[in-house]
Amino acid sequence: MDFDLPESAQAVRDGIAAVTAKYGYEYWDKCDADHRWPEEVFRDLADGGWLGLAIPEEYGGGGQGLLELAVALETLASSGAGAAASFIYLLTPGFGALTVSRHGTEEQRRRLLPKLATGEIETCFALTEPDAGSNAINIATHARRDGDGWLVKGQKIWISGVERADYMLLVTRTVPAAEARPRTSGFTVFLVDVKAGVEAGTLSYRPIPKMGTNTVASSMVFLDDLRVTEADVLGQVDAGFAVLWDILNPERILAAASGVGGAEAALRIAVNYATERAPFGKPIGTNQALAFPLAKIKAQTELARLMTYKAAWLWDRAQPCGSEANIAKLTASEAAWQAADRTFQTHGGMAYSLEYPVARMFRDARIGKNIPVAEELVLAHIAQHDLGLPKSY
Ligand SMILES: Cc1cc2nc3c(=O)[nH]c(=O)nc-3n(C[C@H](O)[C@H](O)[C@H](O)COP(=O)(O)OP(=O)(O)OC[C@H]3O[C@@H](n4cnc5c(N)ncnc54)[C@H](O)[C@@H]3O)c2cc1C
Image 1 (tube, rainbow, N blue to C red):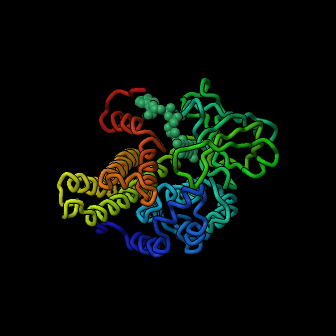
Image 2 (cartoon, rainbow, N blue to C red; image 1 turned 135 degrees about the horizontal axis):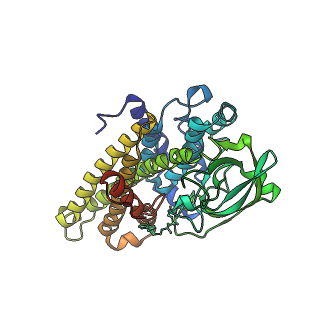
Image 3 (spheres, helix red, strand yellow; image 1 turned 120 degrees about the vertical axis):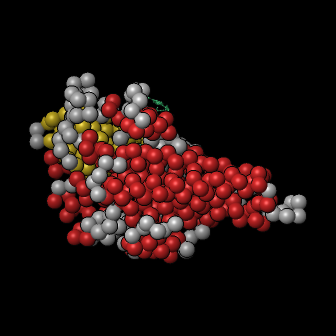
């Protein structure tokens, strides 16, 4: 299966597997149940250099790319970490490190990348708004010019990890949607100092009670004349859409890697149970009604993995990867959900016991079909861009 992986990615797989060997399902179940960040694993990964993999070496990173980051996340998820793996790799190594590496100024790179590599500072990403979910073009959070900077007013929703973050990648409109021509212009992405905003009383947040993915909170965020300056701009003023796509495509690719790893973990649990459980005197896995769906999911998972690697490989070469990122995300999240559902079925009544990680996987895999981009929007993208059908929205 690893025939197409460069040696660097193979080494990442082995390195992450060595870290995760110390932590079993019980560890991840407990972090989720206690609503606790997996601090020990995060530290081990940071100390081993596994968080800064995609940061250039001159800024203290591993000098590798999104492909290696995707392999790291997949391996972590496959160890049983579930959604916790996504947050570990998306929030800081993904949103923060990848974006500052590609779009940051020299000053931002020197100031931030070495600390992002060691996990000393952390980041989160704020795009979604109550009235602009799937339709990012319609966001209303507005940064208006004020002296040598801007004052930002608006509201964001579902912002994961803001309570931990030192910096937030905040997507704003510096030209209101109604005036922007084309409508994708007039966006500016700012690197916001979260703690300074909280102290000044211009940034506040409130966690949303949620069904799962409990190792970080996901919050409403309120911005009330939050002050930002030229030094905080990530990319170009009014041209933030280019930066945004370089956040959204890696986000989809990393979410796909998480789905592939999650599917692997669920399949492993299902196969163990189906091999051991024998209410009629022979393992339940002997029955093709149980075995065939698992075999089919295994095939889907392998295909999703290939597309995930291809998308990451393209992104690393700054080549267009929108279709590949969307197809990877679609197929991997579906494989993860099918795997969780069939693992649930394979466990019979025991699926409902919290002694097994099945319930956690079931919850985590289900939201993967809706975030970071909903399945319908991915299908709309493929219909329009890959099939040439008329735009549906
Ligand atoms: C646990 C969690 C963590 C999150 N973390 C973050 C984060 O850190 N940062 C951040 O910015 N956001 C975050 N989000 C938000 C997430 O990205 C959005 O929930 C997601 O993009 C979907 O947007 P929405 O919920 O507004 O759905 P909506 O856009 O309201 O869509 C609702 C449903 O309608 C369908 N639909 C909408 N428009 C169309 C159309 N044109 N054609 C067909 N179907 C359509 C959608 O597919 C979906 O099924 C998080 C969400 C969750 C649940």
